[in-house]
Image 1 (cartoon, rainbow, N blue to C red):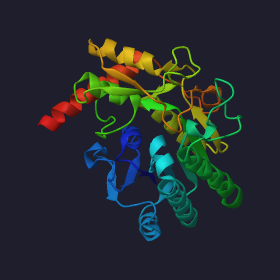
Image 2: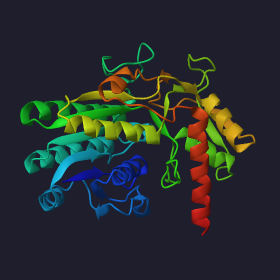
Image 3: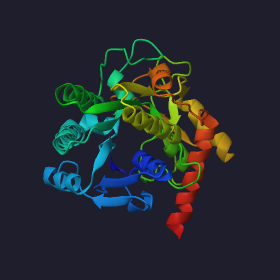
Length: 329
């Protein structure tokens, strides 16, 4: 039996492939390499270039291998881009996910783990926000992910496809062993942008909005180390294999940091100042969002190991230095 990982050449997906390979699992990766990198895929895994929107391609692959689970990362993730290109996001994140689910049901695959997002909550009325909160996304990105959660719920009810949807908060950092990290040159993740600015790869960075109702006026986010996030995926897979109940789980630490606090942490790790421009708010950005993460710890027995901002930043900065050396070679 093998595990199918979609988007496994991307940032988070490549870390999942590493974890599965480290655990001795047989892994097949689907990626169209539009934003992923072939070299980020663990050498023990099989990379098949293709698109999850191609039903014939998926049917052939699922007939060739016996998969006991799908872990679905493939999709578009940039909130402001979703505001300017909503139909593109509904195609990539919702329509193609529907196609993947349909093919999984037809192939008899029993388990499905989905990469969802805290953006489904929009601007929650209370912090931290728990899974019981009513979703109210304020961007097409969040809505596109929520629609896939609904499809999972209904597919489980109709066809018995057991699932876990993990609602990510702000993912950052890199593999502690230096094997993978956020590698997209023009990524919008705050910690990556701050690290690139510190290293002189960007002349400056922008702080989007300084008039939010937060302690220092900048957005507040719950940052989770990518390796801890992946351990939640591995726990979810074990849970489903034990015939655990399907469900939705927040993935965060329950502590928020502001944009300015993140910049200070990067300056501390780098040992020098970062030029940051204060500019207007971006469309689709909530003021603050922090995870209520009791459920993932209780039901999936998740135990984070890297829940410290300085640790997250240090691993991200180390990865940026690695990429600099790699690109110069």
